[in-house]
Image (tube, rainbow, N blue to C red):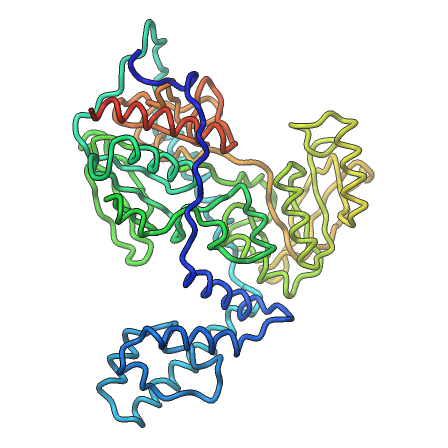
Length: 481
């Protein structure tokens, strides 16, 4: 047919690009100062970081007065080097000292906030519930026309211009960009990538390993220099909120400035992935502290901080990711429980005998498993999680399971609210309906990864996403040249 289709694509493995040593140094300092490992020596670590910074600093900044505390000295360098440098250069020694002392106190206050258990509700939980509501709202307000059955060979992908907008910078989205640039060459297409998170694309498959090293740089798949080198525009912390199909523009919001802007496109590639499904549970709302989803590094950081004052934690969901979450909170020193709706663990992958055998192994590790769990309500006191009322395989009457932390890992749903709102076809179970060239019902809009519905299926695995990225990159190459 002249262009590769999904059924014939191969899946090359994309190597990770390591992050810079400076970022690793910063991550290590944060790990030892914020997360407070017993063996950590924050003062020495911060002093080393400050010395490394000063080695590259301008002479006027290097002349800054030293503090009596090594931990405090990092304040002007790590928090606001540019502002401190200019202020110090124009001031007397006494004024310089005062500026540094004020910044040191501000840093101490900030570190105290970071070390304390969070009292605000989880941002990840709020985002998941907002995504669900956005999808429901779009479904109710937009009528999606059924797709006509295709007959004969699929027409090739056509690009009327060279402005490509990729919405989402996760593992699949980044893999697509790398392959596309490799096929068409640097600068052949005007590519803009929007990432909702501030972090660059990172390896979600190994997300649980973050609890072991607590170093985001070990999961990051790329670095900003790659985008400059290959003439690709990257916008992190920017959320696309609307696709205007009539004008061929996307509307996006900058998370820092809260300002909205528009960008024209010739083709949009939706790589928005999925969001954690939060089952309806009485009293569970976006205002409850101690309830988390298990999706991003930010979610895991929240769990780590909250565990400092928590003793008992339960995970809703006995699938693979739910069991990983349960082991993670167990390693955080929590008395841990798994609450699974089905009669046995991992019902998608295992039969009943295998699921029961797995339960025995899990409980031998010290993690208690409740199957046939029917959650009645979340018990909340002073805005914090205090337990759940439920029945299970051994309790026919509702009882209280006392908790301090609740982690939701009950599956995922495609983040297809942009597609629903702009009126392109979505699947019966969600997801953007695509053909074997990854093209939606709008010939200018494409979808990859967990948000793509191909033959009625949304794949929640990385390998199909990579395969889809290869297919679309090849189609774009053929359309470009």
